[in-house]
Image (cartoon, rainbow, N blue to C red; front, side):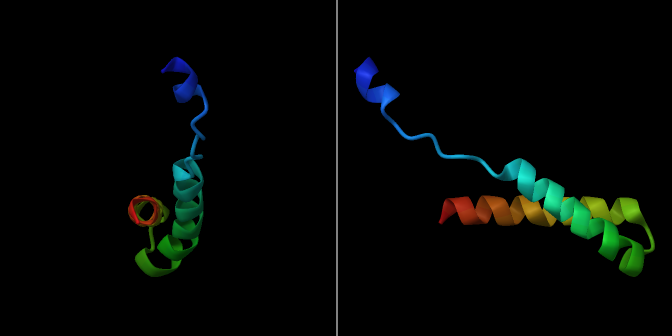
Length: 58
């Protein structure tokens, strides 16, 4: 049983990449749309987390 567990492929998690990219895009749009970089980072990271979870679920 232990041998079978070692042969399973590990799926890479891109959650950190999604958060970083969402926050990076959020900086730009947050400054333009919300006139606040912090709000843009929060919104961008939140959307990126949601999209990352949705993509992994399908």
